[in-house]
Image 1: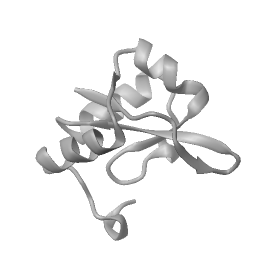
Image 2: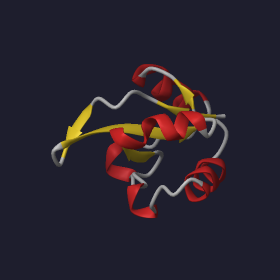
Image 3: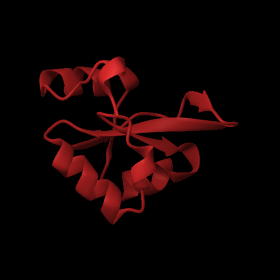
Image 4: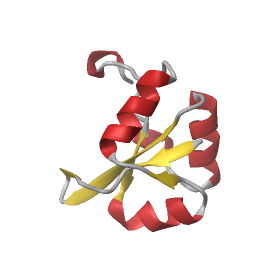
Length: 87
């Protein structure tokens, strides 16, 4: 399942969401590519998505969850990568 948290992370004068899969990296890469999320948004276990694209991601099928729920889902699936290992 594709998950997205609310746009709450400030960076570069914008707010950002995190787009991830609780199934596989392949699933989130395919979803991102199909919906115009640039590859440069990949941060090792999720994509960073600007706030202005949040509603489009939800309309495309991403399930809104809290930031905590997203992290728990990644950990449960064995897909969470510690910050130093991302990239």
